[in-house]
Image 1 (cartoon, rainbow, N blue to C red):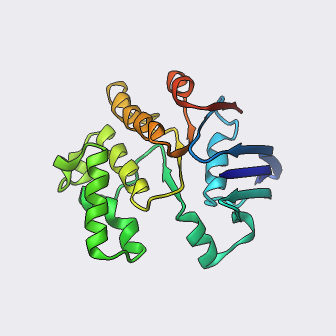
Image 2 (image 1 turned 135 degrees about the vertical axis):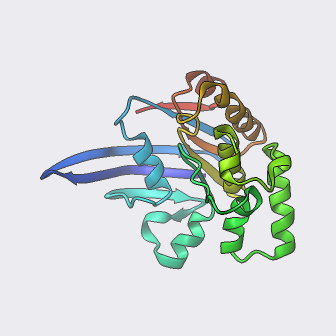
Length: 213
């Protein structure tokens, strides 16, 4: 379960305060999908970045599986963050690595055994339908394929939940469907998901709850 309590994020900008988040509270039960919608600048991406502790909130609490991420640091924070998968607008793949190597990268950082690593990566590529592109480099993939690699990479560590920050907004319209299809399948399998999206039909059809910011 993910619990956010009175979350606030204030930036200093040109001598003034910008309140990107102002008292956000929500509860995401295990196995549920929460869609987050709203106009540009409403704080949707800031919320995701704070949930992942890429940006530390000004105040408030973020609890994942009973661990308060706002009160832990260093190794404890890194271990807690491994429970979250992240997929952003751009796939952010490493150009010098193949599909297999990109998906395996988090496992390599975690020093997972080679045998487990190979099996896990193979399973994830099969899940996102990219087994045939295992040895391809990012420059050889379409935008939709890159995002599917990013999803496989996020899943490789078997996270408790995945945070999606507008994963289809940078894609051509014909590529959006292939990414949303994978996300719908993950939702049907009971993966906990928080999805910032402009895809209203997806938010309506897949989300257990839709939050407007």
